[in-house]
Length: 316
View 1: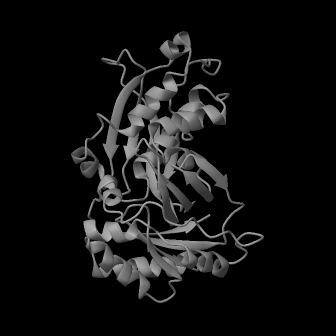
View 2 (view 1 turned 180 degrees about the horizontal axis):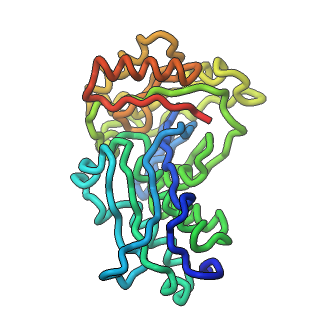
View 3 (view 1 turned 120 degrees about the horizontal axis):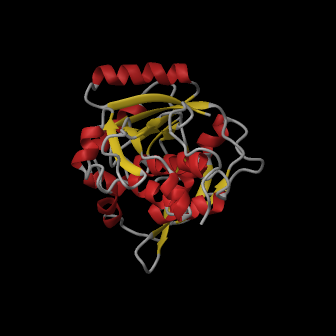
């Protein structure tokens, strides 16, 4: 157990108590096995473009303040209704992350924390293969650690994250990385060459278990070795990605055939180096040289497909 930070209990009013919960994008994802407990073993290269949900801590109203420091969650954003339909705030990873962090505090310190709310601006589609819920949980853990227990070790935070979900530790890291195991083995990369992504979701939620259930095999070959010296150029990165794959793409296409149209639209666009599905879908991405190119492509796709979710974002 760790004490809260010294001084007055935090009131969650400062601007820095908000965080961008960046989308997680799998540039390659190989399914290499399955554990006895049912979890699949993977190898993946992940990156975190500058787009995501927004998580903030704000004081709860004094009237009827809850006995627990955590007063609940307020939802907003384009996909807040979809999140509510999927289960809403009751079982959201954000609330579970907050409770997990609060549980690390000593009893007196926990009781001294003034009641607060978590505001979640849901900008990322739900069940979309880009780790939105995991990113939200990671942002919550990081915000509360900074506010309440800044000396809490990174290892403890990562352990809390792993209990919440396989993708949460890599989202806590929030850096380009090679991940393995069920996602808990994280090897940060020194960085990736500058580039931008266009992310596209056709508005079809895809359940991860359904995709894994449709896998033809679960003992696929591992990722290719990284080039010596890392990815010196964007050509190096995209060349390596072409030697790899997303093993979940084919089964996801059976679950959501609309993904094929997204991939075709991205692959046919000028300036696209690589088009692929992320995670278990249905979000797909295209790699381009820079944000200007990505913004133009995103605008064109949005004009042609106004019901799709389309964003351009840099990878930095």
